[in-house]
Length: 158
Image 1 (cartoon, rainbow, N blue to C red):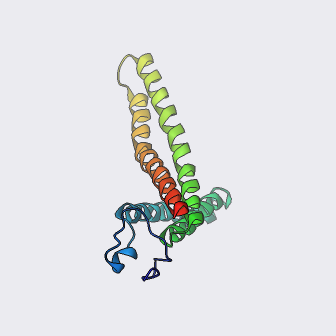
Image 2 (image 1 turned 60 degrees about the horizontal axis):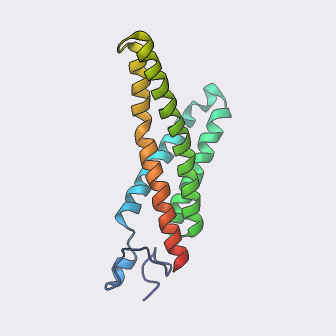
């Protein structure tokens, strides 16, 4: 009964039902949404590999490594592996830290250009748009890191 379902592996996340054996094999909805977000990040990181021939392999090897790490993290998270959750935390930090730096720097430069120009000009608007563009990555990856940390702690305590 404990090992029912293809994703069960005998471990449960908090909030999963214990009355019905079929509920044990389901992933929490937040984890399913996180896996969808990670799938989008994998596609976005592996998508530009088509331009490999024109620009050379340098920048695309880092994107490919990130995409592969995210893919392994997704599989490990679906199997409820503490290593998969740890890899997911690391990969989301790799997204959140540059996003935080970009948001802070573009907001700083946007405010600086706004003060220098005396009003909203072209470059200050561009800096604020850049900050708004990276803000969802920062928020979602920051939430994902904290959520995966909580899930990993709950797996180790069982």
